[in-house]
Length: 559
Image (cartoon, rainbow, N blue to C red):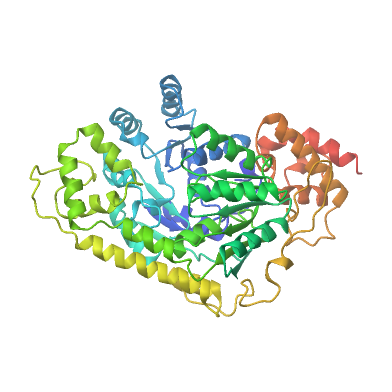
């Protein structure tokens, strides 16, 4: 690991998962920022032929970009590539030139692709964001339902399923749906000690907006995400923030693909400070230095809230998570829960439409998760024995066949229970972190000292001090758990300036070059040779060879 990534030791959660993976399948739950990806990257470096199923195209592209920066031979196959590029990538993976291949569950719907992979003989199948397979998870994806069958077709390779958060019920569902009954289950605490949680109460919509402007302005120069519940509101609030002097852009699924790509890229390379987004801006976010997440609207589930809030502070440094709450915050989630659970007549209508549909039309219906009630209706049809295990193929042609809709009622009650847990988090006078721990099946701890109910310092004690240079300097980005007097600040600033210039030159986000904590160590240790660079955490052989001479020159100017 040191050769590739510049770190000499694994974290305990990584060690446990990798040790178990030597002998059996593994299902691991580890919080965001814990380095879950090393659980499949390191086996790929050792044995090659590792396939990673990822639900978000932008995420896999960012991951491949970061791996390339460390010299790891990785690639992806998804809908953005031409047929010729897909073929070339597949040939490279088959030959062993590419050790780590990322793909989407939709791509695995191609029978020829799956057949080719089965002939290669995979050493490891990794299923990232595994909560997407569970109907009890918060981002259920029907395309994930095929993965158990595909795993069989691939010859049941050693399998690793990973997720950041899952309730005990969701964990059991994931194991069943992926056929991982004999897998080692490694469940780590969801606790994120670097995150500070606060809830702000508002008495009117106008006060909500004023609070949002205040919170974002006080974090001027930091990267942040504002989550809202409606597409139109993303555009309204982004415009409002821009008018108040904040660099902000909207993001939602209704925007065309190119606009979404440009918006996300501008955020990743720090051209845009704040993204105002629906939940569509989620799994594709691999930016480690997001310093704050604000929920303008309350999600329906604590699990969804914690996943989104957890996109702050992935680098392990202090970050803040704010929820703006009103007495009517639960009304919108209740409306959407009701709309997502069709009554008996609606389920019957969907069944009859499926029987009339062509195979292509049917797949379109199944994949459209935004159609009101379709996902739950398909689940009821499958439970009733009318659809095959893939969740798409009818095995009956009777439009009046009996349909068991009790599963929909049970799921609706479950969703309302989850909403009640979210409201409890927002309104409790007790420790908010303990509400989260209980939700995920963990024992509560003593007062956490990092939520507004447990401390008066709130997020102000964690917000960074603005420091400006030519252009705008992000505040709070320096790792604050390192004593501020230790690193040489002028040298640290010079290293940041060099990194910013190099990132623009290479066309990549700055963190792909080096994280802030690596620059702090460079400023502290002041390496004077290529060999000394390898002793700096975060500097592997590839980055030493690529950036070493430049780094030494910057250091020498201060020596």
